Image (cartoon, rainbow, N blue to C red):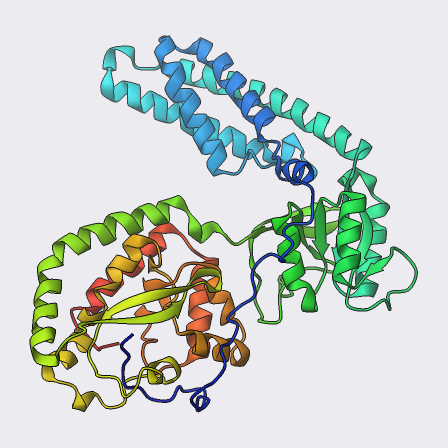
Amino acid sequence: MTAERTLPPPGGRPAEHGHPPVSVIPPRQAADGPWLPTAQRTAARRAPWLPLLAADAAAALTAALALPLPLLTAPLLLAVLCLNARAALYRPAAVPAVLDELPVVCARIAVSWCALGALVAALSPAYTLSARTLLTGCVLQTAASGAGRGAVHWCRRRALVRHPAPVLVAGPAATSQRVAAAFLRHPGCGLRPVGVLADDAAGGEGLPVLSTVEEVQRAVIQNSVRAVLIVGATGEHCALLRQLSDAGCELWEVDAAVPAYGRAESTAYDEAGRTDFRRAPRERIAGFSCRRLDAGQRPGSPAKRVLDVLVSGALLLLTGPVLLICAIVLRISEGPRVVFRQERVGKDGRPFTLLKFRTHRPADPHEAAIRWSVADERSMSRFCRFLRRTSLDELPQLWNVFRGDMTLVGPRPERPYFVAMFSQAHPGYAARHRMRTGLTGLAQIHGLRGDTSIEDRARFDNAYIDDWSLWQDVCILLRTAAALVRPTGS
């Protein structure tokens, strides 16, 4: 493996030669795997979306009786279901009520009918839908959808009262006991606390306090725990909550303070000052302001991977001649071993081999693993300085993206030694590895490249992951392309 001559990192001097290997980040699951039996995990993850979807489909078919052409039923049905799914109407609230969601349902029905009317008028003016037809269809579908959804929610509320889901309450013992008692006084919320997950047992009388992994494991299996209510800082139990989520338990963030307004919203935060979970809108359960937390896997969207493959594949084809010319010039001017290979840390702490054009000779193979950046750019050849300043030395990483080792947009990958060092020194740094590392990222377009603040990089990278969207990826790629016009180097 070739390496590059480098400088010490901004966080301090590295260890001497022979430093033992370090563990990057712990695995997401314990070695013995998820705790819940397979059948229970399946039941816990089963979403009540099918009855709601059937109710909306039946309502659309009922309203289609007002259409002059039966063929228009299919686009109407598709439009309504897609809009409702986009609005998360097939993921009902913890205590569902049809009146709460009726305005959203009505709005999407109206939009679907208006869009259908515009489509018909544009494609076949002879069959243009009249205002009376549109109004009749909207009224029929709204009434049918409201009746169907109301029946589904009524059945679900009755089931919640008869069979409330066993839950654990995580957080400071005293606060957790108070919240658990409040939930037990309101069985209609459908959640029945069976234990408290806390670091100590100083919570007074109430539910049993679970402070060890073995106690939690036993409680989860014996009580068929289906959810965890997080009422404050979780301390050392953040990894345990991740395992419970992987095992099928829902996680709820509960604001236990009164009043809840005028304060910071975040309670389910780890020691890094940020949460490892994506948040949904707040709901009211047993009088508390609650919010469902989802394990942050959204940046692994199939659409993101499709974008990676299409763009990296196209760029490899387009830049093929440039890659060939750079390789030939490097081979002639710098000698053999044109491609520089180095171990970097990727998603979930898994190592991979990163590819770059070699722009500097190593002092020794070990140096690049524990030294920070290029020692003296003036000692490089003119062509190597050109490659670094234009970032052309990064082009081989398109192959890493195409293979799936990296993504186009994400946190930049770092070497295992520095990942371990920065994870200890900078809160939130290890959380960057929730998604694939990238060729460029939010930190890079804000000038955080090379010898810049690691704390700032971690903050920007985590903000990108928390707010990820495909459009944000496109914007970052466009801003990166614009930055290449005025290159500053890596």
